[in-house]
Length: 374
Image (tube, rainbow, N blue to C red; front, side):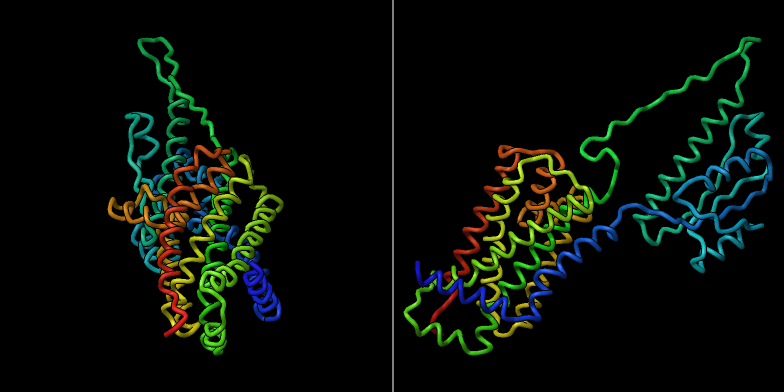
């Protein structure tokens, strides 16, 4: 036990002795949490909106005013023809073109039916889909308003149009603030990247400077060396998690409805898994550049298939099955469940069991692949 403590003490001294690494370990991840949480938005705003009004009636002006009053659209210009509007969309000056046909108001009054043409720049398919939802909502609201204004009489009797009112109830995120959803996931990302990169580069650095060979010829046993090398980064991961939770609560007002110790319990096991992956990478690389490249390669795959930015349910079936092997997926699920839904131990025990088995297997392979002699 004393040998492990001496190695841990040596590692902490080595970490804090490297002044250039301290900002990377403690400051940059926190800045990334603040910046990414504000930048990674699912909302689509400032949509460049234009229109072609062939009718120039009170109804067409009222419809356009609905878009002007929206916070999501910026009215760029009115064009005399659809051809000119299409040209501006090709140049990237316009995202949406609304074409109001001639006799728009007359058809509404006489036939109670008319058509609208909407063209959307769909290079970004996700943004185009969201824009389409906004446009549909505004036109539906306008349509309901017109129906109320064009109340009709049936055989001399006034007919009151029937309206259906829906009152949505938003659970777990009443204000629909995307930061409430994103901040826990980004915190998982930062804890994972920091722990994986530092652990994978740590032993490789010993190889590069030649101290690993000196340690290998000492009576230090394999398990003592590995525990002593990885334990400081396990502690650092928990420290980053703690500071990140404080920032999430103080700056972004993200609720923590569940027991915070469940987050620490899961993170403790999760970090053992991530450090095992880092050890495995360091065992099979000779330089820090190689270790960084391989760690970054797996991190990108894990992040994109974790459900952090895109729902797993929207992925193809084969991709959903692949995500079952992704440890970040389970951490993202658990931290959101505990923080936002107030989940208890019974709710996360499946994810905890999977991560524990995963950690046992990965660390077993990592320890087995580590050789004190070449």
